[in-house]
Image (cartoon, rainbow, N blue to C red):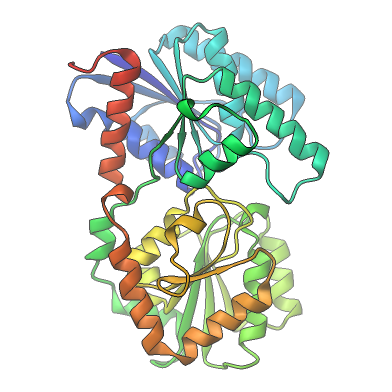
Amino acid sequence: MIKIGYIITKLELGGAQKVALYVAENIDKTDTGVYENFLITGTGGILDNDAAQTLKIYQLRNLVREISFVKDLKALYHIWLVLRREKPAIVHTHSSKAGILGRIAAKLAGVKIVVHTVHGYGFNETQKWYVKRFYIWVEKFCSMLSNKLIAVAQEDIKKGLKYKIAKESKFTLIRAGIDTEYYKTFTPDAAIRKTFADNDKTKIISTIGPFKPQKNLSDFIKAASIVVKKIDDVKFIVAGDGEQRAMLEKQIAELKLQNKVILLGWRSDIADILCASDMFVMTSLWEGLPRTILEAMCCSKPVIANAVDGVKEIISEGVTGFKVEPYDCEYTAEKIIYLLENPDVAKKMGAAAKNSIGKEYDINYMVTQHDELYRKLTGNAHI
């Protein structure tokens, strides 16, 4: 029996959360009876109740995304307590804060095998130099506490090597998978599109993600303001919610886009939303491997996205979509207009996008790769 403790900061509707939960919930299905799992997370996540139905879960109110010396120390202590009680063979951390506190606590608790999945690093090009340097040092320190670093994108390995986070031998590539078959064969509810569109000719541009600085949704709205000046019958929809809602609502009002940009809140019908869209746009400033782009591509949608991290690997320029330099709202708008004015090109790109997503991006193959890694690390290849 291999006991694994998964640790993630908060169970919001994000890629890291979905990857962690899917692996934790399905790893034992690769060979029933081999694994025993539990999860440590913060409180207030939209997926808390779902996780509690399938996993043994410890919720720590002091495990929060924001930096707080007092709360972080308390969270570290409580994670240590749980690990001392559970005595897992492996601790597997996801997300930046949980990755730091979880790996330190694991070593203090005497856990022999520590794995961390890099869903993008805690440092990025938007930070002040001294902040970035501090986070690089933290990543280096925590990598020394890790037996293996899983990267969801090759770009994260390249960045890790560039900043000397760890040696290449410590990294392994396991893509953040999606249910490729589900999205490729999905039959949409035609009524969904009618809730967004004014008529059958209305074009719909979508994006998905939590309302936080990383997602840079302000640029999505700025691009919308440029597009609507040239194309009238178009709607921009955003599935998600979060801390920046008030700011985004203010921006929409100032640009007089109340009838053009719709903030949908959290949605569970993502496949319907993607199928109702004419294209998918992402203006994130950093990412690991954005699963929403993979989902959109499987739904035959061309993608326009900022050329950051794993995005660079999954979009083929001019074939499956377009890559944009961060903050270049004008170019994002230009490509949206181009695809709206050339629907045949958009359709061709969408078909190419769907065909480009193969086995390496499948969520069940991702679980198999985790199973193989866990067995190798514990020396239990023949369990």
